Image (cartoon, rainbow, N blue to C red; front, side, top):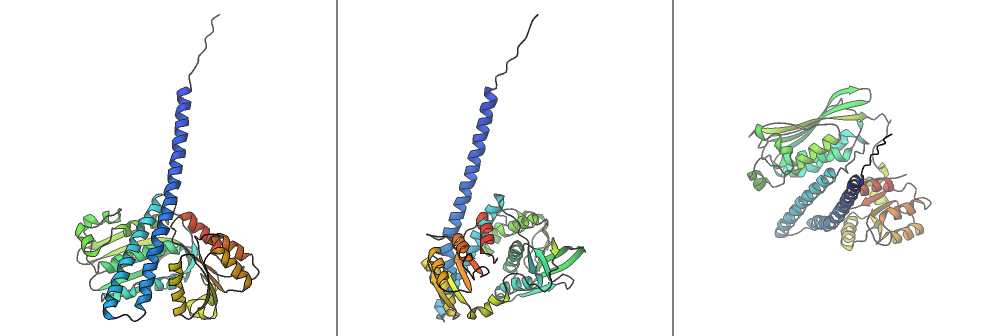
Amino acid sequence: MRRFAFMRDHTERMKMEENLREAKLAAEQAARAKEEFLALMSHEIRTPLNAIVGLSHLMLQNDPSPGQMENLNALKYSAENLQLLINDILDLSVIQAGKITIHPDKVNLREFLDNIVQFHLPVATDKGLELTLEADRQVPEMIIIDKVKLAQVLNNLLINAIKFTQKGHVRLKAKLNRKEDQRLWIDFMVEDTGIGIPKDKAESVFDVFSQVDNSVSRIYGGTGLGLTLCRLFLEKMDSRIELESEPGKGSRFFFTLPVQDYTGKGEKPGLSNDILPGHLKNLKILLVEDDEINRMMIRQFLQNRKLDFEEASNGQEAIIMAKKQMFDLIIMDVRMPVIDGYEATRRIRKIPGYENIPVIALTADVSQNVRDEKNRDFLMK
């Protein structure tokens, strides 16, 4: 009786699997290193840049001479443009790393849109443009949406519309498309009477670093990242941006966004009315910031508004001061030596009377985990 035995050498397969595991581990480590580097660079670049923007703004409020006014306006304009470029690049990096998430929250849509228009109104007025808001009365007052992402989309669209329009108008429109129970679909549109876009370029303007042509970048500036971010943000929110345009006659960017109707009775989104800017004079404020230049800048803002505040240079000092006296509002930096903003906020929350005190986070960090942790720890309980 014959017997046959078969033997199979698994050495190569096992070696291949080990190589794959090592490659996967190396890729994960590289991704973490890239994210940590991005977070560090965003903080290191944005911190001094924010100081330049803030200090130039403060200097413009101190009655400069006409020559100084021109130089300061140029400085502020240049710093703000650099700030926008850095923000766009960092946002794109976060999206491409797959780190972006949607955080729905309740918002008063009419007030939200009004605030966005008011923010862009001075630039539009300086160019002699009419900037208006047209909001459908059928749209509910309160909805649930990721207001940060929606604001970034609308801000990018309005910045582009104002930039590329020399005369005429820019309009932001919101209209109810349809409603099914608590589910709503709202049409948003930004239209202008600007330079327009040829039909053969209508799709490519949403690609990374794309411009209609090189002359557009030379004349108007920018990298073309704004529309790319709009497309990517809207895709994350189950929407799609579209374009209708004709050279010399303007453009219309529009999208339909699914949102939830909010049925909370009489409740307003965000912080309570007790700490709105008009009521800050009645509050005792604690400013916690380790960077001396940033602290000086914020100090001047608070002093110019004659607000009552005290300062701490790190989280440990803030905890000691909070134990000695009661503050109504805390402005807290995130990255600090000794005790950082997260841990300081957790410990202050445990002090009697501080359970619901508003804590405003200051951070130049773009990383998603910082944003998520900030949302958890700096919200009122």
